[in-house]
Image (cartoon, rainbow, N blue to C red; front, side, top):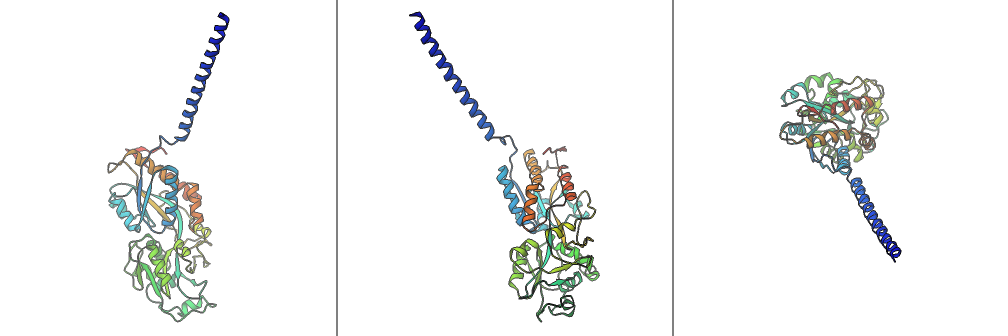
Length: 368
């Protein structure tokens, strides 16, 4: 009888132990699952806002959404033009500004603190035109300057016909279309014209906003693209993405080597095969490279170097650093290559990473 009781006791005990073991295993498994599903639970969380250039906006719309999907940190962006983006950063109403023109020494001195320029991709300012049945139009920098100066007013002008012998150019009035808002695209375009036209350099110069001598105004790259598409005989300068998305013809432009080239990704990147400064404040228009598209440019996100300002939290600073590193990551740069922009060349990418690493919070490096 005693042996039977001991057997029963042992069986019950083993069942209890087995049940307890099962419970512990379940708890351990759930704990592991919870840990696995919350790998980013300790990551910083903050929303970011930016404003500025419309030129890179199609690129930004995609990669900013991708970043939000990957991290849960929302990034909003307003395409209000480069001038508006710089003003917003200066007023500290956004986390970052975006511009197709780097800040001049005078503009830097007007900011309350040191700012950094992070190149995000390369692009091109193209000359789009609206002429029925006219394809592969060729233009030189001097011709473009004289068109926007109001000196060349007809499409069948002898100077245009001379370099386009195979085209049937109409006796039609040329309507130049330019930006009405302060624009980095305008700065890039006019910077190029100052390098190829002495008259333009003397009478107009380069800038985000000019007093134009001929044509009609439109707001933003979308506005100029839309006006060109709707106005017979027009020509306007816009970001290549907008021209390509609307299927508007683009002129082949003569570069400094004398070659007529299109704004392909390879030709845009070739423009940056020059000595680049460590702060990346440089223009690559009218590049000496034989295959370079002559109105190529970088576009920048601009931020304050010291992030402990205006009651900003350390989490905001950390997220901004993480966000900027994503923008120059292979994933984001691959997007640029697929939507009519050009990814940053190797040297530019190296400089961009070094610039992001300079961000500080309370004078301490942001480790991201």
